Length: 133
Image (cartoon, rainbow, N blue to C red; front, side):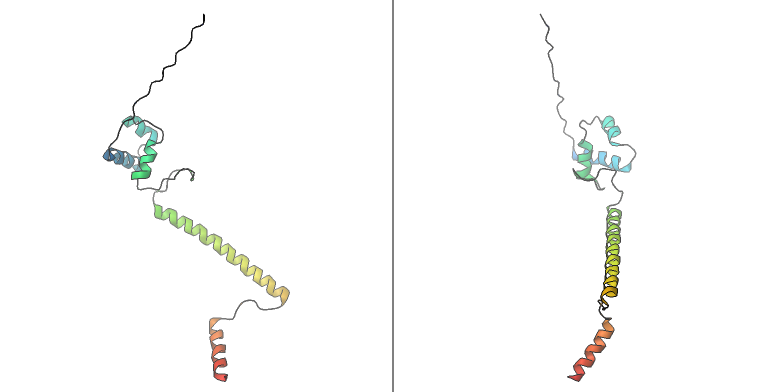
């Protein structure tokens, strides 16, 4: 006869944590003294994502949602926004250079002026046309 192994699954009931405790853990994490794993060990916090969930809810830093880039959050959300805007500005400057080059090539090949005159020149020419009528 074969002996059959009996599997016993032991579940630990989930603990309820107060908001004050959660905020304290998040504050410690954001100071950077202890990492997530160290905080979990120090306070016997179960679950792999519990501290991160608290950070998203109570933290002052930017924490990515599921599917966003993974990495350590930036210290200041304004600095992150500035970096994003600088990247967009650089892309737009490249587009402007490309359009200017395109216009320059078209003007050389077609022998016509594509770009408009300056505003001052246009206003002078408009003034002359209105007086003549």
